[in-house]
Each structure stands twice: as structure tokens, then as C-alpha cells.
Length: 191
Length: 191
Image (cartoon, rainbow over all chains, first blue to last red; front, side, top):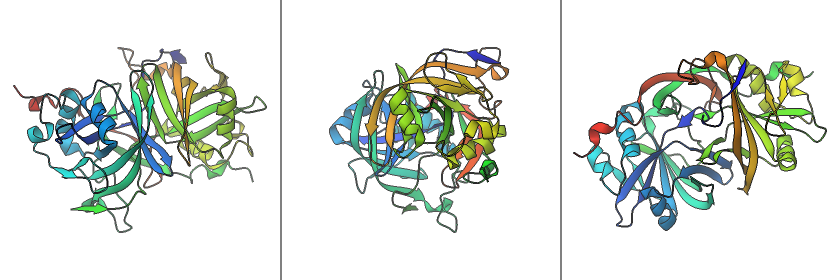
């Protein structure tokens, strides 16, 4: 039986995206966001939703550049901290002893210790009300080669990439495999 | 050690979104998409990336309405089929014996058997190249009350909501809890 619950709930699952930017003083800053996704396959783009009150918002508007860094479970506490405090008030990377590295293709820092880092150039900004949606064209992706398999595939589960459950306000690990996409549904195709 | 892998990889995790629309004949159609997310908290909005070649694209432009239905593991094969074939060629809901229900707030059908359904009105369309990003303001959410806990919270893991691993092209179950958000990071806050 279906029950109407208004509009308070969010989609599941959510990524845990640590967005890296340079602030007005050229200092590296990071913020944790969960509203965002792949936005297009060509040019390869991602979306991130950012409130105008965020310190990161100013940086995005000025530099038109950001990184998306995906943390593993071992970085959960640091990542949580990145979402609680503002870069206006604290040096988040120093506090967590994580290492910013200048992007190779964009004017934004990525985090050396995180297993997956995307460098992005802002191509669109759409004001949606409480959040503005920044679209970034992906310029390069750097991954920890420890988690590449023999076919050059990045293994998300082996890297223990963190995910977000917005309802329980909690982090989750990647789950178990259920079945192959573009395959298990073929049985329904009309013959 | 970081290795550059170009721009072929996608963000993780991805939702498995079954998007419901009415086609030009008023017939319910569904398509499975994984590029999308929450886009703003107010008005509560979601984004879905759709290729212009998709049958759903035409419907979205005409009706300015869609639903986002999140399936459980038991629907994995049906959902996979929804992503393989086009509604131009097959009656997907008939083939899988799933039940379309006319939306209460928008001109789009939701799927009765799925545990989580959002009704959305299109507010923005942004052409990003290979995909266009449709922003939908959420009008209502309907959930299977079986998966609500005593506090009225929808339990994603209990509902076994499907997620997508784009690298392995495979479906995953929700993973284990790792820690509480807005909590485990407090230890880093300067005192």
C-alpha cells in the first residue's frame, strides 16, 4: 500500500563528493556535497548543487573550476568534518592532515589521499532556488592504481568508496552485486 | 600512486531511476536512467539526464511531467529491460506485468509495485550536448508503507533499493552503515 509523504525525502543513493576549490587567498578548500551526479556523456560532465552561502560558491564563481574527490571509508570522519564547518573559519585540510595537489588541468586542488579525483571546468550555472547547480566538464580523472584491475577498471567496492543515505543521515559502504546491467533484462525482449 | 585515466569513468554511486511518462498516444512508458540526483532543496528538485533520441525525451518536452520510481532488487530484471528497449517498439509495462498508476499531481504515471515514487513537474531543460538535463520540481512522493519505520522514515536498505555501478555495468544492493553524518567529523572541529 502506497503512502504519500510529501516532498521531504531525497533520491537514493547519493554520492559523497568532496569538492575542492581555491579560495580568494589562493588557499585550497574542500566541502562535502551529496546532491550531484553525472550530467552528460559528452562532453563528459557532472553536476553539483551548491548553496550560495557556501564558501565554495564564491570560489566556483571566481575560478570556474573544481575537483570532485571520492573518499573511501577510512576518510569518513574527515569528510564529515568537511561538511560541518566552513572554510571561512577553519583550514580543513590542515586539520585532517590531508594533502592538496594543484590540478593538472584546472585551477583547483585535488586530494592526494583519496582514491578517485575528477578535475572539472564550470560550463553552466543554473539558479534553482535554495541551490545553484554547477555543471562541470570533466578534464581528467586520477585514480589510485591500487584499485585498478587487470583490465584497467577502477573497482569501486575494493576502494570502499563512501556513499550517503540522506534519510538516516549516515554513510554507507558499496553494496553487493545483484546482476549485470544490459543483460538480465533481455528475457523480456519480444522475440 | 595516482594514475590518470582520462574522462571515461563516471561518479559512484548512481541511482537506478525508472522515469515514467505518457507518450504521444497517452500510453504509459518507462525508461531506466542513472545520470541524475537531487538538484535543489527548495523547491525540492531532481535532475535527470536524457538523450534526445530517447522516446522519453519527446514525452518530457510535451507533458513537462515525469515520475522517478526507485525499484527494489526483485525488480532488477524488469528495470534492466526498461533500459535496453525503446517504448517506440515495445509495451514495457505490459511485458513485465507492472502496473502504471496515473499521477495524482502531474501528467505522468508511476509504478504501483515499486517502493518509492516521485511525481515531478519539469521546470528547466539544459542542453549539455549528448544529454539534456531536465530539472523536475517534486510535487509528491509515495512510498510503500511496509518500509516505513516507527518514526515515519523510509528505510532504503530494508526496501533493498537498487543502485548502479557504471564501471562494472552492474546493479548493487545498498551497503552497510559506516557512521553517522554531521557527527563523526566533529572531532576535527577546532576548540
